[in-house]
Image (cartoon, rainbow over all chains, first blue to last red):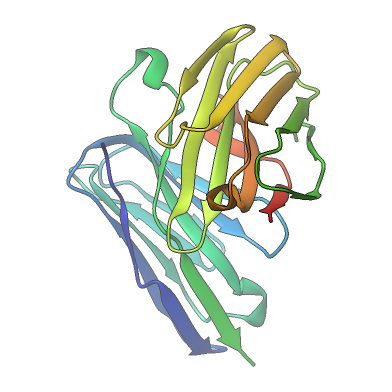
Length: 115
Length: 112
């Protein structure tokens, strides 16, 4: 069973601060996704990274996939109150067949950005 | 965006009763998934489907069954609901273009 350890579990910061969320595993993933979820709604896909060492930027969010494809990070620059939510990482197995699309999710990071 | 709807959005049921949750998609996606979300556990896969009548178990499938008789509908059934199945249930489809999921809005199920 592949596991994804996400840290920290909770993050409470002031508007304007920077933060990083980590997602680590001992397993190799073919791709890794980051989702953001608001209360009462389903998670929404932010980004997918597929190549070891890949860095993707989405406005103030920077996503990195580790060289060995076992870990990832999400960095937010100058956080805003609108960034508040639950952030989830999810890895796709490095195998095909019926494993296709079966994601392993981290436990999530609850981010609260105070004005 | 793919259209994916879950019903009902909320349900309260008694222990021992059967419950069926419905997931409906409008974009003919082949792969569909049922997850449950609980505090401290993230999202855990219950069952998934890779085509009509093709389904398989996920990591927490005990007490659940699924059916997919049409591409657009994926049903999750709790055969005899227990309090441990109180959770928020999410259906998802795989968007092959982005390699990621599109989720429904969830069903909050309470078993009393």
